[in-house]
Structure formats: structure tokens, C-alpha cells
Image (cartoon, rainbow, N blue to C red):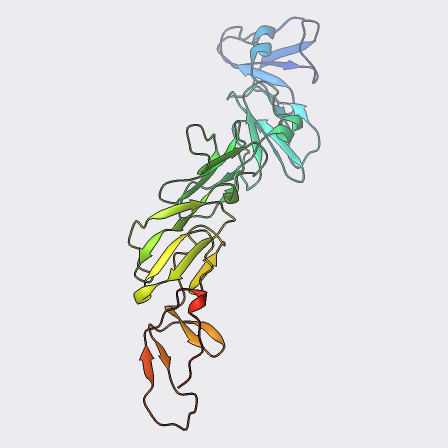
Length: 300
């Protein structure tokens, strides 16, 4: 079939239908810009609108989320296609939807690659690339693995990538959607002896599995001993509710009472006669129980 060519003007060639192009297919050519509703290639230059150029052009599947019909679109200006799936599917040219929403989308770089099958096989990860924000669900696909890691300062990072060259305690990689959760890397517990809650800028730490315990123990002179594991002494408190959960205490010491040991926000414990009618000074003691066997009844 003859193809019209007009020099110096934009030329267009249009395939008759959505199907694989072969030499037996029918084509129309002429002046002007592509019809957006047709599978079409346009160009500038002398005799540029040939069948070979049409075949070599980069195409994507096109579907508007408001339209249920999938079709072959015009030749793309970029070498990428995208697809995103919400209640409906949107497909087109480029490396993102026209309006990037908080919805997963996949990008590919081969002709007619933006299929629903591609999207279904795409991996998505949790993302945390700033300490100022909480993690969020990534909306762009990951082509490798998801990872979660904790650095030497205890900061947590999440994203797309591997754990190559990193300690398995500090980094975890996986290949299922949003699998890179904090619980898969070791947490830190504060470790050492401190003056109450003053740990300094860079306190010493130890590593522990995320579900295991950290402890804080009140010792002599109301100092605090901290570390990894459980502690069974009567002046110990343990926690397993997250990274560095033993960094702060909401009390200052333990004191004996008639009902057992009590957490106190004051630095001192006292002992006084049980008979309130008796006159006499209360005796203020700096008592700290270190072991369960130190418990005893006091009477005056």
C-alpha cells in the first residue's frame, strides 16, 4: 500500500488494529500527529514513517483507571512503562503514574512489559531512610531484596537492597512483600553502671535478640547497673518492649514496705515505729536490697 510522504512536515503512520505487527498487516501513513486512540508512531524527517521505524519504536500498554479497556498506545518518548493497581489498573508510558499516589506501582524497560503479571510478581519493601520519620510502605517496586538493618549507633534503616558484607545480627534481607520488619534484627540494651539515668552521649551497649530482655538493677549508692538478659534480683526491672528499652527508669530506688519491696521516686528509704502513738524521730536509711535473701521483717 502506498504511503504518503510530505517533506518538512510531521509524518504519521497508524496500524489498523491492536495486534503484533507483521509485513502482512495494513498501515496508513500521512501528515499530522498521532491519534491518541490508535496504536501509532509519529516522527519528523524525510520518509521517516516506515514500517521498520514503526516496529522499532518503544510501546507500552495503555489503560486509564477510569476505562476498563487495555490497548496499545502511541510510541513512548521514554524507555519505561508503568503499571499500578488499586481498585482498577492503570498502565502507560514513563517511570511513574501521572499522579503519584500512595499506591504501589511497577516500572519496566522493555516494550509492552507493563502487564498485570509483572505487577503480581513485583516485590515491595518497607522504607525508612530518615530518622525523623517512621517507616512507611514503599510504593515503587524493588528488583532485588528488602532489607532492615541497625547501625552501630542503634539507628534503624529499611529499604530495597541486600545485607552483603554486614553482620547477620545487624541486617536481615528477605524476598516477600513488606517482610523487612524490625523484629528480625538484634536490638541494643544499655550496658554498664551509671548514675541513675545519666548514660552520657554514647553509652556502652550490648546486643540481644529483639524479643529477649534488657535489665536495670539498682545497686549500692543508688547507681544503676544495666545489661542484656533477665535479672532475678529483687532490685531489678526487666523489659523486652523494643530497642534500648532499659534506657530510662521511672523510679529512683527500691524500699522495703510491709507489703514487700516498692519502687520509689525518692532517693531515700525510711524506717519508723509501727505504733503511730509512739513519739520519736523516724530513722532515715539509705537502704538498697541486692538479693532476695536480704529480705527481713523490721520491728522497733
